[in-house]
Image (cartoon, rainbow, N blue to C red; front, side, top):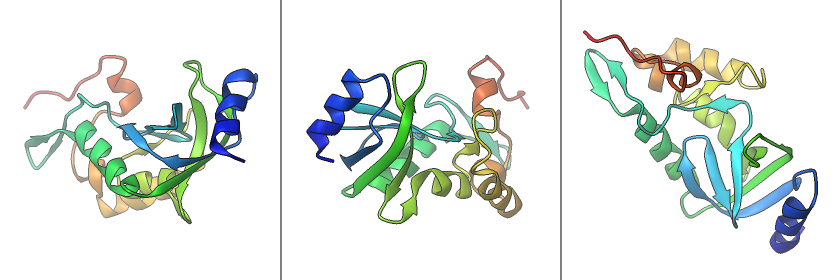
Length: 157
């Protein structure tokens, strides 16, 4: 499907386009934009851009780092996102790939995203791997992104 046709189908249909390919503009660790189509990566949740985490007593900008991780995975590469539903904000909910590399799974396996169990159990195995390996967020203390959005913060030490 040509990108322009995909975009038109996305905007003028009740369902989302099923396939969008192109260069990704990274909004944050779990949201990208391809050709003006905002895409929320399915089944994962990353720290908010202003969110902090703690490892070995040191505070780090885990939300910024999650965004950097997504930029690193997509910079200069063609990204394909496959999905057929929109969220409450009109974003396409999709699984996204660079070639055979599943970006959703990679973000969770690296510990820079959590499996968003409320919406999907697809990436739970990758989360178990990251937790066991103490990767990313699992290297210390953090507040789950869904709790952080509700106002929960790390306790002060």
